[in-house]
Length: 310
Image 1 (cartoon, rainbow, N blue to C red):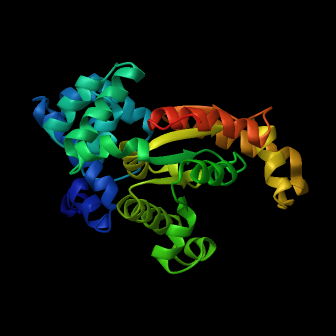
Image 2 (spheres, rainbow, N blue to C red):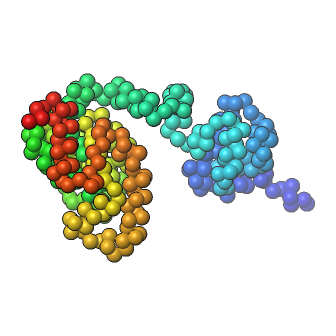
Image 3 (spheres, rainbow, N blue to C red):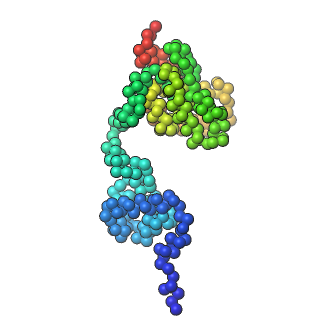
């Protein structure tokens, strides 16, 4: 008897062996199959256009194996689509998302900013009111050592607004300290508390000067709330000044590996700079004394808020 003839088809055997297939790979295969169907391509036609074996493509569509990025790029090219449509991205999840993304594709940064601001007004329940109050809810952003707390307190006292540390509000909302939040619940929970604390502060303090944590820009949803409701000021400084100010506050940990710490600081600043620059106003504090930096910011904020410069 021919034992080979009794063996189940290869596809059936592979599917049986892969009953615990990774959910992401299954979804990836479904997206490829869906894109192929939308374009009316047979598996053979796609394999030929993407320069991939039909067997390899069949395994991909069934969520088997571990396909390489290069193969996915070849398939994306054959589909004439971006890689994100294959690997999975919220902007590819529906026709409307795809149409919106196409409208924004290739636009300049100023155009994208105008689009973001228009969408923020459209979808904010208090869009009109938020726009009116922005000059009364002033948020200071920037890395640690920028002077957010020192200058923020001086500014708040000068214009008669309460000074709020968002870190204190986060601890109040969470019921424990910042370090405890990270150690007990992790960074995802911290970002969730951060956003909730910001939203509550905006409700509690119609007028305020708000000092924010340096990493607030790393969470787009929270940053959108901040930019939509607050007049934001980036207190900018050189990496060297940031380092010197942190150590002047009594934190000498960077001294243990100064070169490495400085390199890390520069990388963090470079990574966040594009987000910090979305602020309404940039106040350069390097090579200025505390009083000089405050005076320049004070005059600008008083003008924005319609207050006397006296």
